[in-house]
Amino acid sequence: MVPLQQQVLRTDAAGMPLEWIDYQQAVRLYHGGQVSYTCGTLLYRVRGGISSFTGRQSVVEVNSIIATHGTNRAIHRGYVPPLNNSTLFRRDAHMCLYCGNHFPEQDLSRDHVTPLSQQGEDSWTNVVTACKRCNNHKAGYTPEQAGMQLLAIPFRPTHAEYIYLKGRRVLADQMEFLQAHFPRSSPLRERLRRV
Image (cartoon, rainbow, N blue to C red):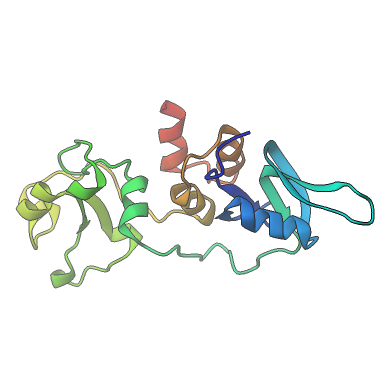
C-alpha cells in the first residue's frame, strides 16, 4: 500500500477525468454507492468498524482511478481551465521561456507575452513562465520590442491536461489514463514522451 497522501483520480462514468480526490473522499463515494467502476492499481485497503450483526469488519478497497455515476457535460471543447501560477509553472516545466533555465517555483513569475498595458489578456495563450530576472528585463514590452526570444508558444490546456497539471505524484497508471485524453498535438504529450 502507498502513503495516505496519494491522490485518487476521479472520472465520470464515461471515463472523462474530473478531479483529484483524497482517500477519505473516495471512501465516501464507495460507501455511498456512487462508484460505477474502478481502474488502475489498488491503493488503499481501509478498514472500518465491526458489524454487530455479522461480526465482520468492513473493508473498502480504493483503486487509483475510480469512475462515479453520471457524466459531466460541463466539460466541453470550449472549456477554459482556471489560470493560476502553480499550474502555469507546471505547464512550462518550471522553465523560463526566455532564458531556458529551470527554477524553483519561488523564483518564477507569470509574464504576459503581450503586456496588459498593451491590451494583452490574462489568459493561457498570452502568459508564460519567466524567471524574475527575464520578466524584469522584458518589463512592459512584447518579446520583440524587448529583443527577447520566446522559446515556446503558450497554449491553453484541455481539461485532462489541466487535471494532470494539478496532480501531485501522478502514478504510472493514472498518467497513462490521463494521456489517453490528451490531444495528439499536445505539447505535454511530447514532453512526457521525452521523460
